[in-house]
Image (cartoon, rainbow, N blue to C red; front, side):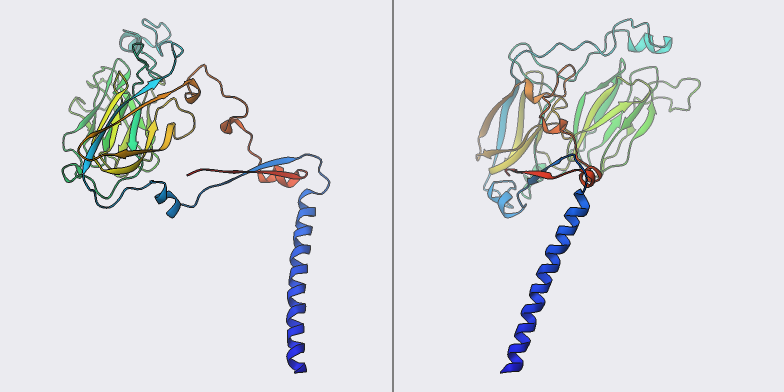
Length: 348
């Protein structure tokens, strides 16, 4: 029996040695990391829920078969009276080049960052869309529309200001202005579109004789949220394209109204986008849970106060807003004193 006991004792000694080594190594790392430095670095740790079972339980994904279909109708409104935004280009602006002034300053170019109907507070150009493509799209809506959508330029403005289209649907870029525009998309998942567009060919530019027929702009992949479109020749010109891989979206009209038809019955997660919402995603609402009933419209009226529109010019964010907190780099952590860790937990 003695050999067996000796083996067991050796195993215990090895295990104890491993524990002591690990603790010693950890202590040395801490000493090496923070020795001799007076400043304190604060690190915030966010624990995110694991995707999968938890998300499914919260209704983040739709079922693969539908018991029927319904629709979603409603309004999105702005609470209060927004600050009036001055035009991007004033009528008759004398600072423009002569060839631009005749076109771009013939009338004022409005600032479309935040358009609120004074009668009722309807928010225009907000997008409500199903967060994920469902596996049970209504059969007649499964294929993207064949009719093309047009992205125009008139009076040195992009029209429409916000454009949503399905992947596979033709998109044609046109212009009604006699001066050229550099239509430049800034996608994250698709190739850039960056071309000169003009209604007629200027003598000094090698452009098509007429772009009213349209220059194709192709999106092969869906974007997670709308992407910006700019004109590098006229820097105030800006719009948004949102290529999406399903038909379940709506763009609010001048009264803030929207309607999405043919939704599979059941619980869905919707995102609500507006260009003035803060953050890279510009979401007023994320994972909004709505249950669609069979063969009837489900109504959802939404409203958001000024705090949700922190990106509007002239507004400011509180210093404790997450997007304004300084980021502590690894180098600062290495040079700093004791680290205070605050833990928060994100809800699904």
